[in-house]
Image: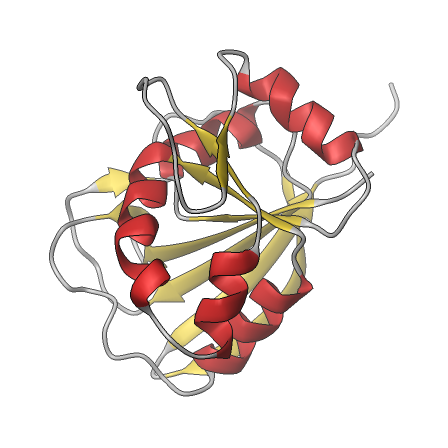
Amino acid sequence: MRPLIVTEFLSLDGVYEEHSPWRAPYDPDDGPFKRDELFASGALLLGRTTYEDFAAYWPTATGAFADRMNALPKYVATTRPGPLGWNATPLGPDVVADVRALKAQPGGPLLVYGSGTLVQTLLRCGLVNELRLMIFPVVLGRGKRLFGTLENLPLTLLATRELGTGVLLLTYGPAAVPND
């Protein structure tokens, strides 16, 4: 079974989406982490908004990272009709069943970038094997929070890493549930 890995940029107060440019500055240590993560994956799983943002940028970008981003198959959770380009396939109305089917296929890990609403669903349904949180040293006070609608989500800390400029990478997996 192929693992599903989620990577999110978060502020210290858990915001994953806020339209101000809060994620800068980027440190050079982020590059190798993001590159290694992308090159190790077998496909991207994206929400529609993230897909549209990426599809507007990456097809015209150049370099090895862009080439890999463009070449990977993409699966998009969407309720909006219409064709998708950029090597993408829409998931059906039962996203959870479709993701389970994708995980059962052979291949490298499914990688989710951003896509907060989709990630909340995946976490709620126990489909995430690894949750990588890049925590940026800023408190926003407003914006969409990744864990705002989730309850009782036990996680196990797998690894920590400093990426520079105060950014921490915290990697979590599902917590083992004790037998009753």
